Length: 156
Image 1 (cartoon, rainbow, N blue to C red):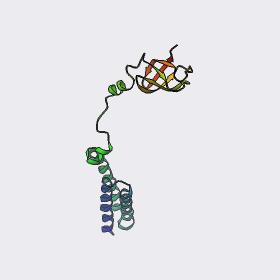
Image 2 (cartoon, rainbow, N blue to C red):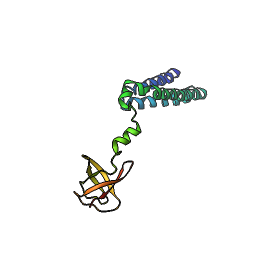
Image 3 (cartoon, rainbow, N blue to C red):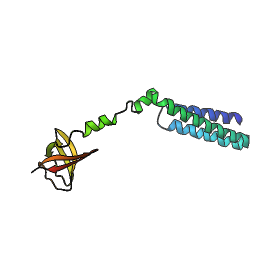
Image 4 (cartoon, rainbow, N blue to C red):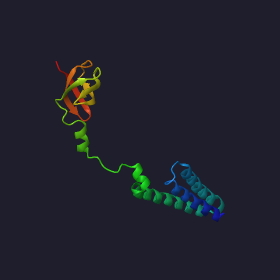
């Protein structure tokens, strides 16, 4: 029975390792089932001390695998396909989205009651008013920009 417990443990580790390369959950689930089965069988058929040893061994193995996955998986071929590979500078993102819009004029593409869509400098933007109702095709001006919130007013 000891050989079966060790074989289930090794098979469980192998299946969990294969889950990285063959995603879908089936291999990982089978690996976890085999690891749990190896712990249960070691308690039942071998001895309580060996059962606690297997529990410790499985916990240690999963902890090491988790650490290695966090450390090396993002740099692997599959990890590079799943994770963002470059950082976006927050200043660049903010500049591209709303900087320089203050004081720009445009046209309301929808009724603004108080939010809607406007066309400013050839770009469609989600805008809000200060509570006023502005009809479609009215000329508007940006009076406040805070993050992605663009506040407009109607030009007379």
